[in-house]
Length: 413
Ligand code: ATP
Ligand code: MG
Image (tube, rainbow, N blue to C red; front, side, top):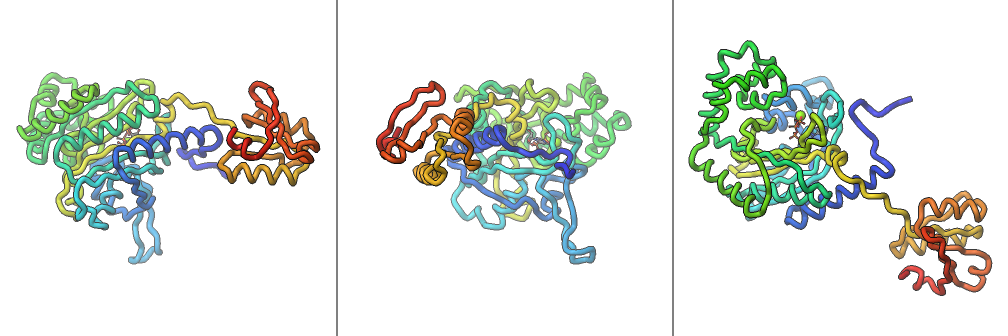
């Protein structure tokens, strides 16, 4: 038997109904906030992710589904299944000159992402993200707008009290001071850091703070290192930006905590980074990660453009939400006259009602049994009903039955 690939999953039945509900909520909340949908391709040039996600990240170093197409010769192209969607949206933004429209430009997306990771609870190889990207606004209003949109989406799913963690990484200038201090203080510990962190030490030392390795985490507990981490390197302008954001969030009654160890995986973040977490998820506790990436558009060849966004893990959302009970269909047409049953079913569907009939042409009692499992109402079309032109409508939750005189009355019922 051929099975689904490790770390991938079929979504069907009741689960798929819940997924549709999550998608509908995403669409409604994002579009109410004036984000428009963008669908970018599932695969892109590998170089886009190498540059746009960054070659010091786990994603680029270990997790990409990369293959070459077009033969083994020099015409072969290296493509990669998208591991995240910010790089793709930025590529599209540049390619279509969205910067010529007046800012802000606001996009949302919902779709599959691919990372070659060790599958475990909350971690798949094909998973889904719902997210937004907002371009063209330097002000902290945009950071607030993006965070509020994430919260509103969570609220629409009944998730009201997740923990929001915030940090600021500063701008290229103050980030640099911070990096140098971290490097200096960690230099004596270099041999004790994990292999990943040894590499990060050169390429992206701040990322070391995010390391989940127990040994590395213990090193950060050292008093002198803690002191460096907690010291304020942020320049006045970045500080003001962060204060402004916090003010907006306070004004809107959004609770958050500051986590100085939060740097997020991707290379390109500056200033605001945030994560939304839930204890209920266990060790893979983050449902949402986001932040500001003012340098990315320019780095990928566009005009300098401030930007901020988030990505939400849909599988993790799914485990958190109270699943709505799947809806039954509106009508099941119960009749041994299969042609009449088919005709009525089609008319109901054309009038935007969900309806079903018995394709197996079973006997009346079997049909009614099936109807009571999957439908709210049974419409009984017996000989008398067909001859005299009325419908017997049975409420399958109460067992009550009554006569309905016309089709109009039936669909307005
Ligand atoms: P993690 O620390 O869990 O690896 P990350 O920093 O790699 O997260 P992001 O790239 O920020 O994650 O992606 C945003 C969100 O997407 C995460 O918060 C998580 O909910 C979800 N996510 C990321 N990777 C996976 C995966 N392999 N399977 C399921 N969901 C994922
Ligand atoms: Mg990851």
